[in-house]
Length: 79
Image (cartoon, rainbow, N blue to C red):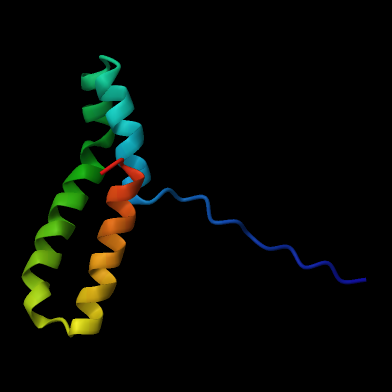
């Protein structure tokens, strides 16, 4: 009998990471939160700039996908 073993994707999204960092920051652990997240935050800022520059090149359908993802991720953060 063959048993197929799969994997479960547990990598958090950026919205979920933001919730973790916000909790640390609001709990008075700002220095810990910033030091731990900074390499990822730097990537997020760079990615945001890249997306901003690309937006004018995207089709309406692609812009809609971006907008939906932004709404989903901001929703995870309570916005």
